[in-house]
Image (cartoon, rainbow, N blue to C red; front, top):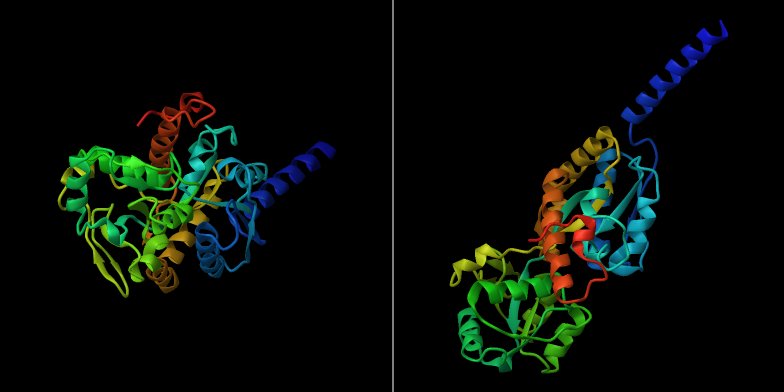
Length: 334
């Protein structure tokens, strides 16, 4: 009789557990953003989480867990939590370099099931004194004097640096790359006349473009891009169609959950994410922040991050800026 009672209790608890999982979420969710408060990844996450909270009818609390190599502290914190969908990690494409730099112990998509809100496209701009009026003029000038034109694109191995290298590969031009510790120092160096060419995002440059401090020549995506109060910036692909073989390499800002989370959790968050992305708030956010919205999640988003991880990490390894070979983590060569 006791054994029968035990079996009945076990069956009841299993059924209750299944019902509880099916009801996800039943309590507040926390999203730990790996970058600082007020930054692009933080603002993006606070915006999408507020919209998803409305869909899920629960609170989503956004906190910041900064520090470590390429956002390692925040990723390791969330990795150490239960894979139950109640702790998410807010991140960006830059986090894919953490493993090869010694901050994380796994390939990105071996751990994370990502959701991509989007990102701002990179733009090639020059300072007014450069005397260049078009992207084609810049490329021809660079080809005429290989390495004579100084260009900054944030740090070595960054998404902006990879875009500059892709421009060189797709056009045959050669610039003298000058690395800085971030987009802001790079842009400030251009304002000071240390470099002539800047490759950072439209979101980062837009105020300088509107103020006529920078002359935008081309965006590094297939379509032209419009900045309110300025006008339309053409695509670099127009004069150099071969660039399509190397670009676009876009930002991927969003969040992720454990790969080990249940299918129900992934489906529930995916449905809420899709609905939130289709709302007017996110469309307004994209307009104001000069974002191109993605909405990819699951396998589609993993494919994006696998490609970015491959390109970023092997480039860092080639530049001798990686602690470990990407091969150690099973990261394929691009």
